[in-house]
Every structure is written in C-alpha cells, then in structure tokens.
Image 1 (tube, rainbow, N blue to C red):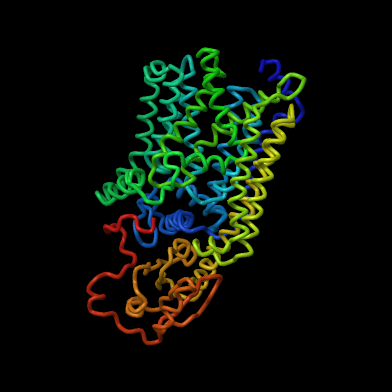
Image 2 (image 1 turned 60 degrees about the vertical axis):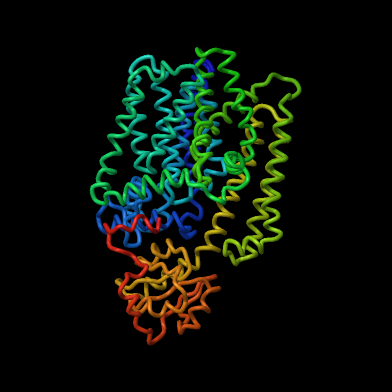
Length: 585
C-alpha cells in the first residue's frame, strides 16, 4: 500500500474511529454471561479466591488458597483481579474482567502492529479476525492467566521484531520487549521468556538474520530486563518457603508437567496441536498451511530486503515456535496454544486482503482449501452431533446430569461446524473483493458465539451451579470460623463461594467420616448425590440439595475421633509456610 492510499483511507469519514469501535464491540461480545456463569472448577476459582484473600489480608506477595501457600502461579493476574475487585466488588464479573481486557488489548496491539507493517486495511481486518476466532469467545471469558500471557507474549515478540528491524535506537524496542517478558514471567513463570525467545530465534534463523538479530546487544538487554522485573518476587518466595517453593513451582508445575510421561496423551503424539488449533480457529484454521507456504516462498523469491516478506516470515516463525515448544508437553491443555492465534489473525487478514485484490475474471483459488474446510467441518461437527444424539455416555463420564441442556448445546455446536465449513468453502471458491472476508469470518464468529454463549454457560450451570448454591447456603448458615468438608469432590469453587476453607476428604471412607467431622464442630459436608447414600448410612442427614450435589449435616452425636486419628493431622488446611506444596493448585 502506498502512502497516498494510506492517507486516503485515513481521510474517510469515521475511519479514525473504526478500530476503537471494533475493539469495543468485540469486548462487548465477551461480556454476556460472565457475571452469571459460576466459576468453573478448578482453575477459575483458585485464581479468584487467591485474589480475594489478597484483598482481604492485604498480603499481595505470598498467594494463599484454602489456607495453604499457592505456589502454582506467580501473582500478576491476581493483582489485576484485586484491582477489579476494588472497583466492581468480589464477583464473577470482576474475576473475569482482566481476561476480557487482555483480549481487547491483544486485538488493539495486532491492529497497531499490522498497520505499521501492512497498512490500515490489513490492520483493521486483523482486529476483526481476532474477535471472530472461537478461541477469543471462550478464553476471553475465563478467569485464567492465559489471555494475559497471550497479550504480554505478543507485546514481547512485536517489540523484539521492531527492535531487530530498527536501523537505529532499536534498544528501546528491546527494552520494551524485556519488560513484557518480565511481566509475562510474573504471569505464568518461565514460559513468559521461553515462548518469545523461541519465536525470535526461529525467525532469526529462518530469515538468515541470526548474526544481525543476535550480534547486537538488544536481545541480551531484553533478557536482562526481563529477569530484573521478575526476579525479586521469586526471590521473596524462595526466602520464605525455601526448597518447598522451588521443588513445587519449578519442579512439578513446570519441568515435571512438561516432561512427565502420561498415559492419557492420545494417539496423535506431537501432532495434538493440530486438532486444537483447527477447532478454536475454525474455519480459517484451514488456511494455516497456505499461509506458512506463502511466508517461506515470499522470503525466497523477494530476498530479505522486503519488509513485508520479513513480516510474514516473522509471524510464521512465531506460530511454528509456539507449536513446537508445547507439542511435546506431557500436560496437554488447549489454552497452551493461545499465543498461536495473534499471528494467525494477522496472517489470515493479510491473505484475505491479497485474495480480495484479484483482477477481474473467474475466481481461481486453491480447491483443496475449500475441500479441507468442508471435510474438517463435517469431522468436528460429526463429533458434537454424535454427542448431541447420544449425550448419556458423556454425562456419565464427566458427571453432567442435565441431558436436555447437553443435547441442545452439542447439536448447536455440531451444526455450526458443519454449516460453517460449507459456507467458508462456498465463499472461498466463488466470492471476490470484500465479500470474501465476510464469507470467511462469519462462520468463525458464529462458532465462537455458540461456544461462548451456549456451550460454556451450559457446562458451567450444569456442572458447577449446584456447588455454588450449596456453598452460598453454607456461607449464610455456618459461623465464620467453621469449615466445610468435601467428600469425593474437587471443590475449588466451593472455597470461593463459601468464603471459608474446605477439608478435602476424597480418600476418606464413609465409616471414618463421623470421626473426621467431629474434629470440626459445626461443619457441613458437600458431596455428589451418587455418594450421599454412603454418608447417610453413617447417620448424616440431608440439609440441602442443588442439581447433582447434596449438603449433609453430621450425626447429632458424632463419635469422637479415634486416638490414631487425633495423633495425626487430618487431611485439611495447614498453616501458611508449612511444607504443603501447592495442594489445591
């Protein structure tokens, strides 16, 4: 795009306001349900409760959860939640607001970066693509660290690229990249440095600019600043908890979770990122092979003096590096790949703009892309349609008891995948100009809206609403120092909603429960209704029920704990600073 074209676009009425309007509308799309859907076990309530404890105690340095130190994650996301609590009050909305703002901030960052490199049209379309991706509509509503990590990772990589491209004063961009990496490390640990560094190094090697990228002091300045920003907090944890912290955070939560062999990794092996990205960026995810090919071809044909070719290769390296870093991970969670979607959004926008500029005449585009969209839509849609037609097996496996709600959500999502793939294929083969972007992005937005406004609320209400309601009952009935006991449940959201510690009795048999609760006067027991009869046979009586969960009171004359039970501590919270690791992670 020439400077004259850029000035003409900027002079159009309303052109200046288009990006903030799109970003505001994208943020508004993430707001429905965030204040009504209960916090989903287990990560959401752990972050939310940890932040509530910070607000309550004023201790922002040593995170706590359920009466124990929480070593699993650094505190930056919690600090943002505390700020949201101070403005909006302690609620689901406030707990999730940092993720909403992080998604909006990432979209604006993509617009700014793409405008510098490719012009306003690609930039604005990058912003639109970002808010059309299904991943945005799911993770942008979740009280987890990954949206914030995505924003900071993107900021670190963008700044490093600009520092490498700068003829002079590039050290300022590298310094900014170091600050972003340091904050990312305070968000989720070493990945805050590893992921940006991996993307930068892969680009430097692929573009044959390794000497230029690493020969100057900028990358080392960035690394020094990143360590300087993050290190004080980690030193504070080590000084207080010693080896307990290093073994738990750096050992289990990073190295061990990455390297420990698991039996549940599935048949795909290192290829497991493919279905994850295919689903959460559908249907534009079928364009990824074409975009990677174009990036490599551009740098070969136009040589390294073309800034647009270097920009495309940089985005391709960013995408591939993140996939390669997490593909071998033993713990496989889809949110690990959120850092893939910013380069995907910009590359999709770039490709759609190039395709829209085809000369008059018959539309000639790769038929395999249309075929892949239809096939993938049928495969993904078929999985969810099968779940919708036969929801009983899934309900038994994940303890969901509302069969009609599961069926409705699965059928809607399955239909959205099948129809979305077909519409994308039709538009790819027949549309031209601006209509191509509409055909490509409308199905993606439709899938995202179904995931964010149907599937996510359904799972939250069916699985977690009952625990929330019973926890609120306990908050009203129990005195402030009384505890709850969870029998056979993972109950992070109970801790948050009940505003009290929860004794986890998952490995305790029913015969021992009366003696256990005798140590905690006034305690109530929460369990799944399938296991309530085990406790009722021991004299426990039902005092409340919601969805598939039951609240039980102990026998009127609970037996005293046995001598052996009293000689060893019960499986409950231990005081801060003890060697408990990060139980209740």
